[in-house]
Length: 377
Figure 1: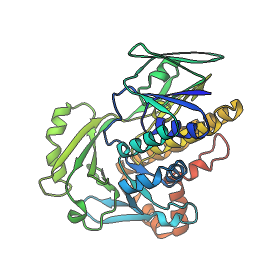
Figure 2: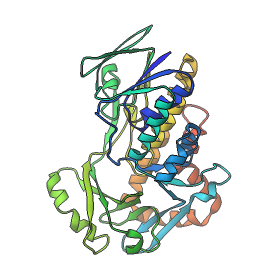
Figure 3: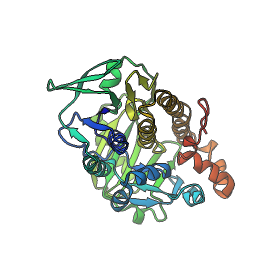
Figure 4: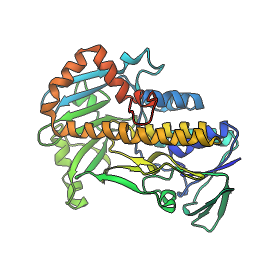
C-alpha cells in the first residue's frame, strides 16, 4: 500500500517514518528544494520525546539539543514569580523534562531514518492538485508531475494546499497583535542570573518570552498589528535594551501574525490532515509542533483500518480544539493580565500535587490520556 505525504517538515517526516515502519511504501512531496533551515519551533515535550525514542530519533536529537527541567514565570522588573520543575513527572514519563532544539535539526535526522526504511522525498514538488476516488488519490505538483497513492497525508503547513483542494474550512481567530521574535547571541544566563531555559515574563506594559535554544536565546514580543514591519524592526534594539540594558547582538528577527484555527474535519475520504495543515495555535506553551507529531503517530497507527482512522482523526481534532487551543489561549490571557495570576502561580509552585497536575497538562501528557471525544484530559 502506497502513501503520499505532502510536506517534509517534522510532522510530515514523522508520519512518513512511522508509516514506513509499518510496511507502507511512502513518498514525501516537498515544495522546497531542500529541507527548511529556519529555526521555527524548538520545544519538545515528554510524550513527544517518547515517540521520537520509538522511532530511533531521540538520541540524535538529544545530542543536538539541551535539556530543560524547569520553566519560570518572572517579573520583568523583579525576580521569579514561580518556577515549575518537570521532575515532578518522573513517575509519569521516562523523560521528565523538555528538550530545546530547533526543528531544523530534527528534520535531517528523520530524513535519514526514512531513507533507511526505504521511503523517499521528492523536493521541488509543491502540490497543485488533489483528486481522489474509491481506489486512491492522485496528486499533481507544480512541475507537472503526477503521483498516485492509496492515501494522502496533508502535512503541508498552515497554508496547506491539500486542505484548500479539499475545500475544508479552517475557522478560528487571528490575534490582535503580531509576534516579533528575535534570536540573539547574548548570554542571558550571565545577564539574568538564575534564569531558566524557558521564561514567561510579566509586565503591565509589555510582556515577553525568553527561550533558550542550543544556538541562541530567543526573545518574543507582542507587537501592534497595524504598524509597518520596518518600523517595528527598527525599534527592536530599544525594546531589547528594556529587557537588559546592553547593546544586543541580534542574529535574526521576524514578525508574524498569530492564529488559532482548527480544520472542520481531519479526514476526507483517503486524505488526512495533520499538524499545521489541520490546526494552528499561538506558540505560548510550545504545543504546535508537539501536537502535530502526536497527530502523526495516531494517524500512522490507524491507517488501513477505517474505523480506527476515523476515531483517531476525531480524537486528534478534539485535542486540538479543546485542549491545545484552550491552554495556549489561556497562556496568552495570563501574560496580558499578570496581576490576576501571580498569587495562583506562587501557590501552584508551592504545592507538588497541584503542580504535577498542572505539568501533566502543560507537558501534553494529559492530552494523550483523553479517552473520549469531548474531553480534554
